[in-house]
Image (tube, rainbow, N blue to C red):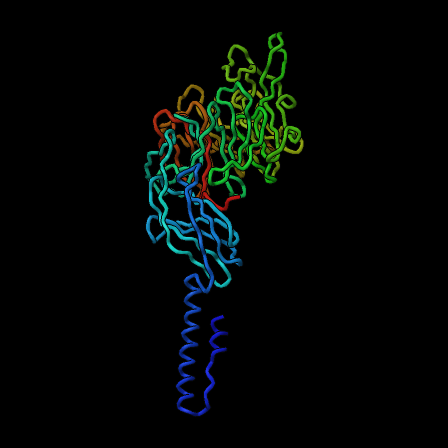
Length: 480
């Protein structure tokens, strides 16, 4: 546009005159200046295009900045560069077009941040002005972690559930600071948390902490803390997954009356059920039930009374899903077993350990209580709360040969037997071949190197329980 204007205003002077030469030189200087101006504006993010943006704190999470932006119509993405100075240092992708809104997650409470919005176009980056925003404070009950860094951590952030002064879902950064949170309603707890497959927010499973009322649900929260959807999942508890279709697969108690020691008795079995987001009970499908696939094994004299609905037979306390194999892996606390289930047929592929064990297990130590199986390429990894009478927790890896039906323990990470968790516990593989481990009632999160040594240790306040968790590389992003 500038070039066309300059050409249109080109002076007409007689050829061969000194006046004409001077005017042509002047024109060339003006044209060169115009070209330089065009290049400079494109490189600096202008070029006649505007990038405007405003940031406000989320009214639900005062450490989250909600950025509304209006930039070039041909923008292919928009990011926010942010930090404690104009050097920025952090980037959050918040849009895939020139206009919209997004959430910046990772800010510390009570801190001033510099930020700017940048739109990406074919002509180059269009950069908005530097601006500042100051975050609010954390509510009582959402605390930070005390951090030790003996190695080189790599996970970025971790999302987990906590139970202390309140029941929360929290994202911690590598400094142990709580940068994102949701507080559960009174009487309820978040039994599990997962980042959505599409990265647009967080999924939380809700249950009654006392197991008396059926309030089971999966909630979809946007990065600014807005509740996107509340999907009722009857009798849901402990754990859930999101399938490749975006449906929720979850553990659900299945209470039936059966004969125990010659008496009709209510027994709490298990089912795996699935429901689409926002679905009704009519949309629920049952993938598997313990009643159809396992012999009933209960003992009224040893029942711990966990469920007021009846004797605890299975007690699903961990659920994993492999889309490529269309298989669920379930940990059965009361049986001391790990079960792989064919999602298509609803049949057991195999049962590992416990009274229904189908493998010849070579070496290793039998476990009594365990949580959170994580499938691997050759078997699974497991958080073991205790081994027989030994009161320490560990992470073990098992290699399975399903053709020969043999299994062996190939690895045990015990960290000098420093932690004992009587409830919960989880482990997740990291891209660097390390592990992110939450140590349940011990109130500790660790990142372990590939050799099993601690690279990062985060400890919660005394009495705080850390639930299931998973790594989050880049929290925040576009808002619905």
